[in-house]
Length: 72
Image 1 (cartoon, rainbow, N blue to C red):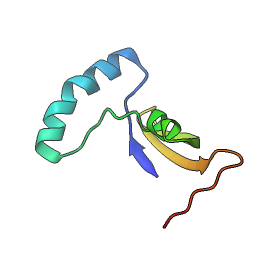
Image 2 (cartoon, rainbow, N blue to C red):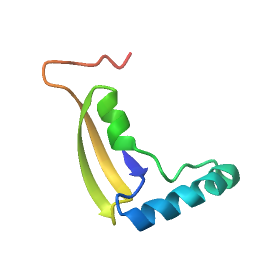
Image 3 (tube, rainbow, N blue to C red):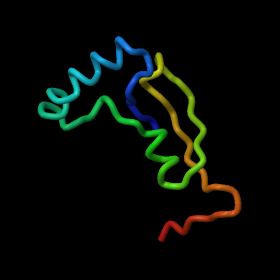
Image 4 (cartoon, one colour):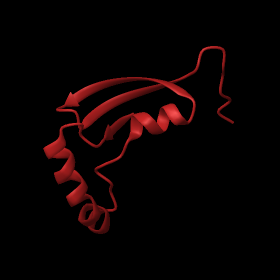
C-alpha cells in the first residue's frame, strides 16, 4: 500500500500537524498518519520503503511468523 505518513523530522512534523486539520476538513485526508505503527499494532510484520523524504512510503504488511489471516 502507498501511504502519506507523519515525518520524523521535527520541523516537518510540526508543520504537518499544523496543516492536518485544514487538509482533513477540506479534502478529507489526514497527512499525519502513523501507518507503520498501526499495522504493527494490528499484528502485522511490515516492510516499508521511503519513496519521497520520509512522508511518502510503500508498505507491505505480512502476517507474523506462524500466523495466517483468512481474508474472508
